[in-house]
Image 1 (cartoon, rainbow, N blue to C red):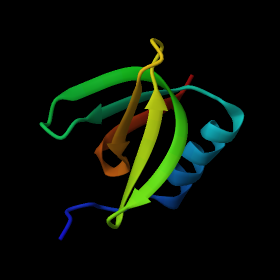
Image 2: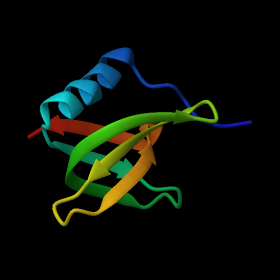
Image 3: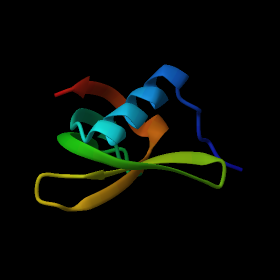
Image 4: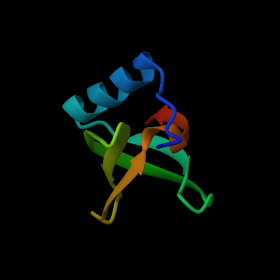
Length: 78
């Protein structure tokens, strides 16, 4: 059983458009330990597994990260 909470369809579409256009987003999220993060990231892909959705992103240093969509607290277009 998962505690994943589906996100709004409009927000999901915003992530899809950012991926398609190569547009970076300022994201604020909490990791699995609950630590807050705020960073400009380039969304690369949306993935679904085990009834949860994830955003794959790349930071300015070229490092890839993946986190659950319901852990994103704020999204701003850059």
